[in-house]
Length: 342
Image (cartoon, rainbow, N blue to C red; front, side, top):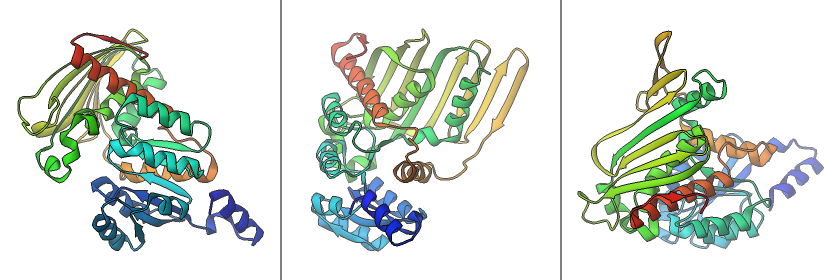
């Protein structure tokens, strides 16, 4: 039953809308899908309808943990819910989105939106203006990035000049659990992870007009793409930026530096802390974690579905991030800067 029908039926029965649970089906029962299933249980006024996966054993196991139904049939999961959360690998997202949108279901889709810009634009064509459509760029809910966004919007740092971001992680165990990650054509390669930083760069400094990427595969023999990359940007504003990332680093960290006309801000996402230096001196801000960002983004999705308040990570953001991924991959393959838009 559609969300509109649920609301109408509730009103006809003289019940408040919030007394009718919003039913969400999760498509994809892998690592992130199973985590989302546990988080949905924590949302007030929301219940899990189905866990769906092509691997019946995985779907059954996750559904058993959270106490909902399971299926291998995408259509059954979509018809039996009010909204769809897509947590499949990138190569399987287009079909899931198409089924959900054609049924009129609001969509929360994990990042990246697809495995190519062509597929992302097909998703945009299918979904734009038809249903609420949110993309899971969870870093937008990290306190340090929320604070940087606030400082930039208030003008306290001045005009941005340079942004440097790093994302270092290690994928060896992940590659064994999820073989699709070994192939760039199925996963977008290293950018399945680094799309987070590409999105944050655009979120903080605006549209990008040129991308130049360098990469190497020196550690992980089992993948067919670069395990270390450095991506430089020229923003439309005139600012420049760099994202350096690896999925072969045994030392994990996500850090960065933002240089602006009035101040510079160094940030550590592990500690969720900022160090800001200006002509007036230095100060530190220890923000800490204020909750699970994955849960916070789900709450924002539910609010969009129920109240019409647009979330901070939209379909357009997903397509723009995919364009940055495509430009970076094109630059890696051709050994030259790539102009945007593509």
